[in-house]
Length: 82
Image 1: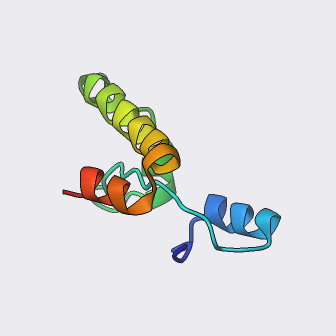
Image 2: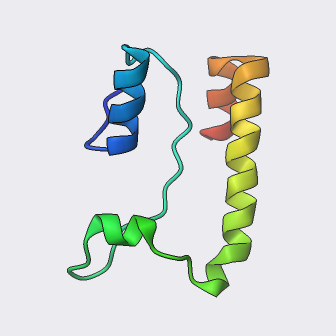
């Protein structure tokens, strides 16, 4: 559940499912610096120095998805939101 916070991908999922009743795993990429547009920041190529860290975080997000399916919401929140 939760709102889409202006996220067009979530708006699309909500529209296709005809409900907002679904779980999601959020993955942050930080905020733009200066006067850069948020969309440009989110869609930009990650700097080389960040790519190794990114791979670790993508794996963590995948693990959270698997946990959500196999262990349920409460156990996953306890494990990954601490």
